[in-house]
Image (tube, rainbow, N blue to C red; front, side):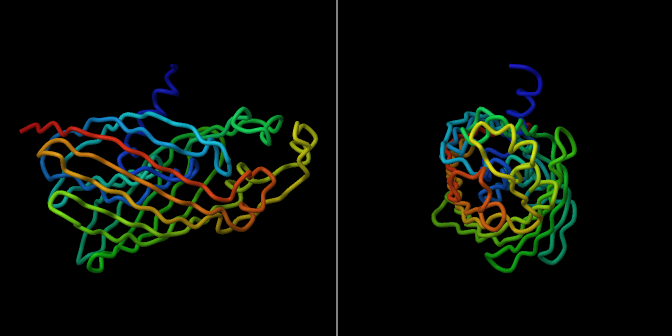
Length: 272
C-alpha cells in the first residue's frame, strides 16, 4: 500500500465513527461523536458498506481504522461527522458554535463501473472548510462547507441540515440527521458531466451531458454510539442518499438510491 492509500485510510478513519456520506459526501451520518473532556486517544476499527462511486448500483466493503483525539474543554472540541467532515469547535456561545473542518474526499476510478470506462479517473484529495451550528434543545441545525485542495479540482460542496440527538438508554446515544447537499460547477463537472471528449472515448457510448451547479442530493441517516464499558464503545451507522437534479439525471449514474452502513468498535486510551 503506497503512502497516498495509507493517508486516505487514516483520514477515512477519522470519519469512520460517524460514517459518512456518499463517497463524495462522504458527508457523515450525523453522529455528534463528541468525546470526553480529557486527554487521550480513541483507537478502533470500522467496517462499512458503500457504493463503489457516487451513483453506483454496486457496493463494496471497506475496512478502515478509527483514529481520533479525545480532548477538549466541556463537552469536547472534536466532532466526527464523516470522512470529509472532522470538525473542530473553536467558538461556542449561547448554543451557537463554529469552527474549521478537515477530511478526505474519495475519488473515482474507471474500473468502478461499466459506465465509467474510457472517461478517465477523478482523483480524491484533502478537504478543508468550516461549519456553523445552533443547538435548540435536542435539535441542531447546521451549515458546512467542504473544499478539496489537493488532487483533481473537484472544488466545493455546501451541506445544510438538522441533527436530532436522543439518549435512548443509559450509555446509548442515537443521532438522526436530515439534510441536502449543494455542489458547485467544478464538482458537478468532475463527477456528473460527460464532455464531448469523454463521450467519444466512452466504452459504454455515453452521450454528451452537462451538469451545472445546484442541489445534488438529499439525505437521511442515523447513528448510534453504545458504551459497552467505560472505555469500549460500539458504533453503528446507516444512511440513505437520493441523488437529485442534474446529478440524478446524469448518464453516469446507475442508481439514484445510495445506501451506506457500517459497524465498528473503539477503545479510548486515557492519558491521565
